Image (tube, rainbow, N blue to C red):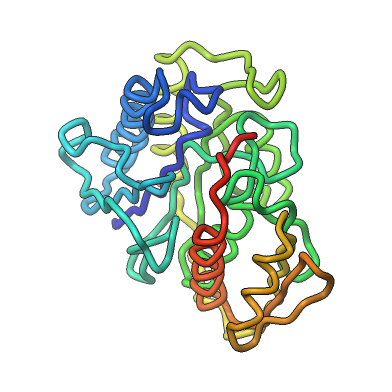
Length: 276
């Protein structure tokens, strides 16, 4: 059984603030170790379920957060950037399941460190008219590749967002949002035991998902900056719906890859801290 783990940082056990998750933050070094421990709990669960091949994609920020020596030896790490497939780099139809560790709710939600991909630079996103963030877009893209998401961990808002998108996914709340930078934390050992158990149980009966037909979807993104939207018009197939909102039509996972190009263009035009 081949398992793919996509790991973000904002939804990791114990972390609540930008200083916990940004390089240079006063608690970042502690945060990256907490990130590794949540991942290792998921890896232990996968091993207990019989996984023989486990890929971990460090999908947060610089994508160099997990120290290779801190990762469980049963897992292989994808580290660094740029990545053409962002949070799903390395996912293939040969994988049997996707596990999302440390995910967070989308921009506009009152979840811990909530945002969509680029801090406040992205104000809203929609996939086929449905509000979407990192959770929904990853789920839809994995489904298009033909691999089911089986477990998601994060705060309670992230778990609710996942359940609203797909109620069959097992969720593990490792903290409960009090506000965007405050949470009621589960004890670390309790949270990691819950992650390990959820992964082991979910992988005992992995659903079979066929790769989706190449149906066209529409991805719409509203940016904070009109200059980002204007610049993206230089990419074939991108259209404006208003001065700050762009959209494009395409088939997943290609549309997800195109979105990655949009974020790289936006990053070249802006220099904003992500959690203002």
